[in-house]
Image (cartoon, rainbow, N blue to C red):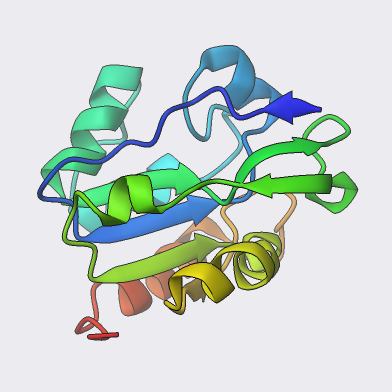
Length: 164
């Protein structure tokens, strides 16, 4: 069983929480979210925020916090083969109250269908907050171009917040 090695990234001004499923092999090696160079997360987020694409972990942290985002994953621990979401078994969810009790999160988003399914099964019944699914930035989601991802994320994330 692997335990999530990356602490949540947020501060007292974070309003939008973005959750993935579980860190990839590359992310676990790097010790930070979305470490695989082919994952489009950082490019999409930079496009949304009108920023340069962050290259270092410190630049990535700054992009998240300066734009009032929070970042974490649904899963605290699981069995997983490589980076394959489809292989995830024996899930222990993260405790989102760590973030929700300390930041004014107005909306929760999940990055992809697997994160959505895990969120709905393990987290939503406990915190009673819906999450909005965003198309996955994973390179496995090859049907979505970076431009199409950016447009979908912009429409969802930058639209008026759902007060739920």
